[in-house]
Structures are given as structure tokens and as C-alpha cells.
Image (tube, rainbow, N blue to C red; front, side, top):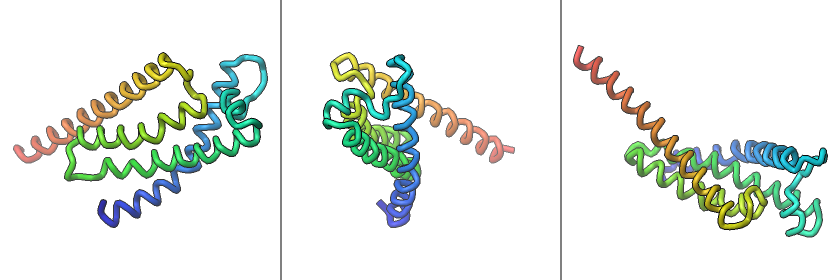
Length: 153
């Protein structure tokens, strides 16, 4: 990774950290709504049971949220490696983010902790990445068409 990309990774990691906390908050808000008993659960019951107390679970979730957001932010530099193809950028980003996101989502209890939950999570994840790839591909193709039309005229 070039020196400038390393600096950008660190900067974006730091910027992404509070965004990760915000995402964690909204996930627990939606889970609380889904539980439907009128209470707010700052962590999932699964995580609270895993770490013994609500406070311990909140600390773990806070650290996980910081890492989660930081990695999403930092990994965005992958899209700026111009020497890589779009497919390589997408697959690399998918792998990096999956290695971080899946364990966090599983441990936090953001998905059912069974084979169906894992398969649904992975299917959604891959569908999102296919959408990212397709959208970016169409954008690049339109830009190339626009450049070619300017060259031809």
C-alpha cells in the first residue's frame, strides 16, 4: 500500500469509528423494536448473556462498533487503487470487510446464531456487494462512453 493510501486508511479508520458506534446504536434500536416489549435493549440479550452483565456487553459492543466503523472507513481506500480492476477492488473489499463484519455481527447477536441466520446474513452481504459492483460498473461504463463521445467530436 502506498504511503498516501496508508495515511488515508488511518484517517478514514478514525472517521469511521464514530459512524460504527452510530450503526451499533441503530441496530440495537431496531432489535429493541423487533422484540416489541416496549423496552430499549442497549445490547442484544445474546450479548448480555455472553458477557454476564449489561455493562460488560455494552463495553464489548462499543469496542466492536469502533472497529466495525473504522474498518469500513479505512477499507474504502481499496476503491482508490487505480491499478486494480473493479472486480479485484470489489472482491478485496468484500473479503476485508467480511473478515471484520461477520464475526462482529455474529458475536453481537445481530443475526440468528444458527445456519439459517448465517446463510441469510451471507446472502444479504453478497447481494449488497453485487449491487455495489453493478452500480459502479454502470457508472464507469457511462463515464467511458462520455469520454469517448468527447474524443470523437
